[in-house]
Image (tube, rainbow, N blue to C red):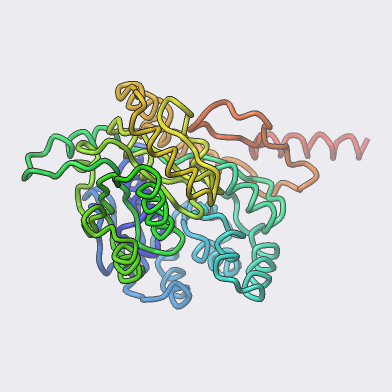
Length: 407
């Protein structure tokens, strides 16, 4: 059973739709529980059994979630997004003991709270994570930075993994080739929710610095919707960039804009593991980004598929954009790199292995017995694994220990 707060347009929601649609139906009977089905953005296959709890807030859905779990009787419950994961961890006692709970984190926890500038809330959530995260059988982080942040906040969990996000390259290629009306060409394109953490105010500052240094402005498209739209419109006007920066709103098929752009620009203040960079890479589009907490630096191979600028270095980013616009990238290399390291088949197999193994193993490994993560990643998209001890192995080991004790 997969549980997600909603299926509105967003990275976590896109991931859960991909997971639901592509788990092997020969191995899994997939049930998808949506807390609120309003503004449903992603298509779900008919083979997936979908339940809409029609509840506006996750915090008010616990009884409906419990009822649905008792009805379906899944072996594994897989949830995503911190507040939902935490809710299930707190109320773990209310669910059948034989069900395994897997939680996938979606953000750098401490950074998100720093932005809210609420020390009391941060302390409260930190304590909740410390007390209750152990109730989850397995936790998945999207990037190494996210794992480090989780350990800092929630303490050491015995079953903690890093698995990068998947990208469905074939679907993107189909959408790239979809007949459409003439699309305007842009030098820069950026896609994301118009919210503070996505840093579009910083993008405007960068473009303003670019104009001051080079006397021109790259023609820029910003695709997305959100609460910061009014502030962004005002910032564009104040910077004198109304003819150069175009707010295009939310698009069902942003990839045709990637096809007609020269460079993707990301100015986020932090990220989990940005799907949109993978999507750009699948289109062969290079990118530049600030080096912020999250998975960005696990995606960008400097000089091959893009460049990283020092965080908050506005002038440096302006210069880097100019450099990248005149740099000779190999579009085919970018596509192949994205496919081989973050392709759907590669990553979904990791999730299938995780889901299958968690049913077969004893999840309450003591911290003293828990093995360490590998210090050296094997490569992008790989699992950074703990060694599991299967239930039958543990049982045999305990039996031998008891036998020796009796002797």
